[in-house]
Every structure is written in C-alpha cells, then in structure tokens.
Length: 397
Image 1 (cartoon, rainbow, N blue to C red):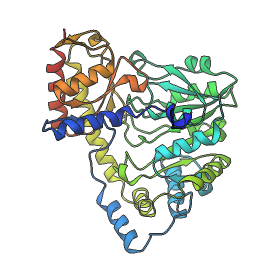
Image 2 (tube, rainbow, N blue to C red):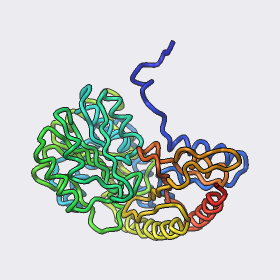
Image 3 (cartoon, helix red, strand yellow):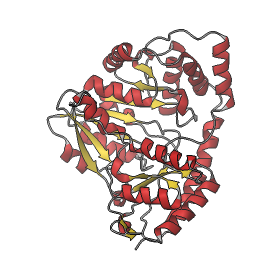
Image 4 (tube, one colour):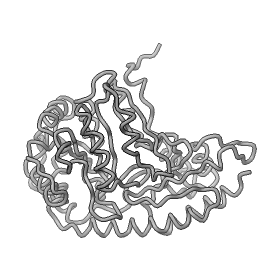
C-alpha cells in the first residue's frame, strides 16, 4: 500500500541533486571528482553583503519578518527594476520568498488550476514540470534544439496555445542551455501572446546579471503584456548568495496578493537576516556583479573552445548563465567494457565513473540528446575536466 499522497508520488526527484549526491559519494571514497553538475557560483558572497548580515544580527533582526518581505527591501527591488530594467512597480507588487524556487512555485500554485496547460520550452529547468504537477496542471513542451540555439520560435508558440493554456514559463538567460532571448525575439513572442489574453507569462530572470550580450531584456517591458507578466528573480546567482535563500516576484497586484496569502499559510516571511543581506546587495556597490560576470565570460570562452575540440560533440556558444549544453547524440549506442550508453543520462554516469567528472544528462531537462555542464568553477578545473572527458569519450566504440 502506498502511504504517500498521490500528489507526492507523481513527483520526480531532482536529477541535478542526484548527480551531486553520487559525486559526493565518490569523493568520500577518495576519488578526485570535479563537480560540474550543480548550478551554483563558486564565488563567496561579497564582503559588504556579509557585513550587512552581521550587523542585522547585532541589531536584533531576529523576529518574524512581514510575510511579503521587509518594506525597505521591497522598495530597493522596485528601485532596481526601474533603474536597471525601466520597469515601474510599487512595493505592494513585490513578494519576497525563500528563494526564486519558492517564488516560482507560489505563482504556479496561485494561478494554475486542475488540467490547465502551462507551456514550457524544452530544454527546461528540471523543477518547472514538477511544480505544474503540484498544481495539477498539465505541462505542454515546445522543443527547441541546438540548431535554433535552444530558443522557441513565434510559430512554435502559436501552435502550442489552446483554450486551456494558462501560462508560459520563459527562462532567459536559460538554465540549462545558457541561451538568451534578444529584445527582437521577445517582441516576436509578445506579438503572439497579444492575441491570447488568457495566457500569463512567468518570466524566470534569475540569471539576469550573467549575460554576455549587454543589456538584459525582460518580457515585462512590453506594455501590451504588463498586466499578465510575473517577473521572478533573486540574489542567488548574480550576487553569489545561493545559501541565503532570497527570491522575489514583481507581479500584477492581484497575483502578488495571492502569493502573499499562500506564503502566509505555509512558510511566512523569509529569513530576516538574509533580507538585510539582500538589501545590501541591491543598494551597495555593484562592482562585484560585474567582476563575476567577467570571470564567467572568460570561463565560457574557455569551455566552448575545449569542448569544440572533442570529436562528436555538437557545441553552441551560450550567451548567458554559466551552463553549456552540448549535444552528444553521436555517442548514444556506443559501448565500453560491455556497457552500452543508450541515453544522455548513461553518458553522464559513464563520465562520472570513468572520468570522475560530474555533469547532468539532458533527459532530466527534456533534451535526451544533450548533457549539461556548469562552468561555475575555476579555469583549472575546466581544463582538467574537459581533458578527462575527451580521454573517456575516446574509449567508446
């Protein structure tokens, strides 16, 4: 007898965390494993942000925070949206949560009803379909391959919309591919959405500050869509603050109110100390963001060059985030030591066992012919890891 709820039984475990766990086990056995499986900056949180958190402790910010976040942080987020993105929001439209993951889940649970459809471009971040399952909605996938830089076209979007479509989740810069939609590409998608007023856009912009093409472009900039776009963002990636767990939404007031009510019932407000750290991140010196982006771009250039030298891998040039998503289809069906690699997950497991490099198979991201590598690690680790991968893949026949 299954004692778990049907809701939980329907969920899949996170493949990215599963690979991180397996690599940790190998490390514990004494193997030198290079972990390129988890999407986490390898930088430490900037000093002025840490100091703000220490001051918050000394100033006794140790009580419950307001459910939707401290007013000063919400105002700072509004200022950031205006100054960096040209977007006008009031603090009442901001809800601060325990990470952008909670922010996303809040929105999906607030607007998606049973059997309503949510369009998810594939490759996608592993948690999107699982969140839609929690809301008892139905995921509709649009596949965009490496030949189109992993970005969907307006025609693909148009063909996927039905009378049951409730939302589109759009992640730019993208996890897992690193692809970034240009203003013109977003405008073309917006033109399709204008014809379907029942469709909301959940714009996951957590990698906003890590893009190599200049100005970040937000789906919320188009006036015709403003009333149905929810921007999801946070401090984890741009400020190297993954463990602080602060994310937020900027949304139409009724959606913000709904998320506030939902959050009030199951977590209440996020960490008071982390919010004061996030306030320092948004109001302090932004040089740290630029420095990290320079390092990520250098690493991007390095990993693209090295992976392109491996026969059989199809590699594009990602324009943001810190992931690369090479196509490895030419290795499927090949064998080593009597074991055949039938899926990208098999390729990932082979590279973990044979090369001691942890990465993630594309199956988990809705792209069964690809593998995801995070280059949020040192140049030395990148060089060593890709050299090992090259040697290991050459053993397949």
